[in-house]
Length: 351
Image (cartoon, rainbow, N blue to C red; front, top):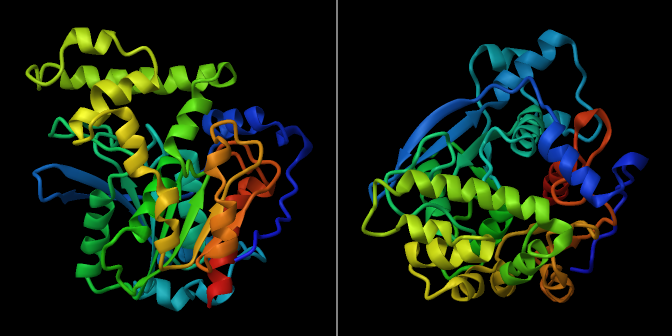
C-alpha cells in the first residue's frame, strides 16, 4: 500500500515532540475504565497478568450518563441497553501491548481500552512479565521480541471460543512485538483480523542509538533506572545468574541489554538481540492488515524505524507518518488521542 495521508492536526502547544511525549507519559489522566485482572499461567512456570475491560459495561455506563458516542465511533458496535442488562458481550476483542517498563494502567493503554470498549470491543490489556506490580518467577522477563508470550495470550483467548474477531494493538515495544508476531513463520489464526502499531521501533538498534543521544538523556536514564530497579529484585533470587557488580556496571540501556536481556533470553549479545527481534525484517511476511503510526518528530525512532519501502511494496502494511505526535504523544481533543481514534477508523475501513 502507498503511504497513508494523515489529517492529524494537534493543538499548537503539543506540536513539540518532547512536550507531547512528556505530557502524555507523565500528566495525562484517563478515568472511567473498569478493569478485571486474570492471571494466565505460562508453560514455563511463569505468569502474565491480564487486565480485562468489557464493552457491555462501557455501553451501560455511556447510556446511564446520557453520553452520545462521538462520530468516529462505529455506533453499530455499541451494545444496546437491553444487551447490557442481559450481560451480552462482544464477539470482538483487542489485545493491548504496552511499551518498555509500562503496564496495563499506563494512560496510553487505558485511553486505548476506553475507546475500544465504547466502540463495542472487549479489551485484554497484557502486563508483560514483571510489569503488573509483582516480580515474575523466572530470571527471564520480557523483551521486544518475546512473541511466545503474546502467542500464549492469543491461544488463551482462542481456547474460550468466545471471540470471532481478534485485534492486536501494540505501543512502542509492544508494537514491535505485535508486528513480529504476525510476520513470523507460524500459523496465524484466521480470527486475528488486524494489527495497529503505534510509535514502533521497527529497527531496535536504530532506536537504541537515538535513545542514547543527548537529546534523549532524561528518557534513557528513566528507563535505565526502572530496569535496574527490577533487576535488583532478582539479585537475591538468582545469585548464580547475576551479581551486584554486574548491575553496578549497567550505565545505559545498551549495557542493560548486554548484561541482562541478551543472556537471560538466549541471545549472543545485545546486537544479536536487536537483529533477531526487530520487526522490520518480518514485515514482508505479515499476513493481516497492519497499520503503523510513527510520528515524524518521534525522538525515539531512527531513520530505519520508518518502513516506507515495505509500505509501498506489501499490501498488508499501512504506514502513516504524521508530522507531529512525538513518542506515543498524539494529543487530540477531549482527551481522545489521534492514534486511539485512528485505530477504530482503521478497523471500520476493513469491514
